[in-house]
Length: 85
Image (cartoon, rainbow, N blue to C red; front, side, top):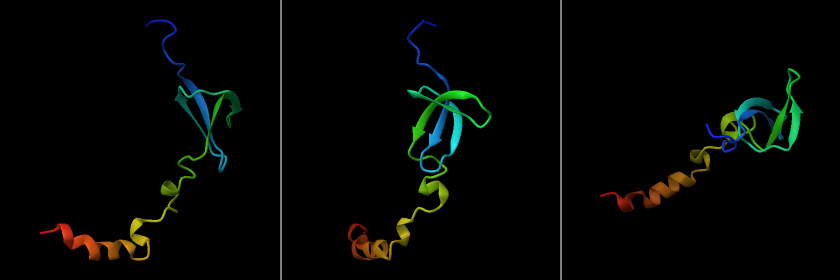
């Protein structure tokens, strides 16, 4: 392998800012700060706005399109027969 052309692939601590959830994985993400893991290791830290612990889709709080007060059903009744032959 050539020297100096590959990204810095290392363990990085990702921190969800909305709830403080932390996880470690290998990444090339650019970091300027470091943070401590639960086991005491000092790793480069990357801050996230949303992770699987806080995203509405994964937590089950996201509203379904079908639960929008009948708007989808009204649309289907109105325009569903236009394209079908």
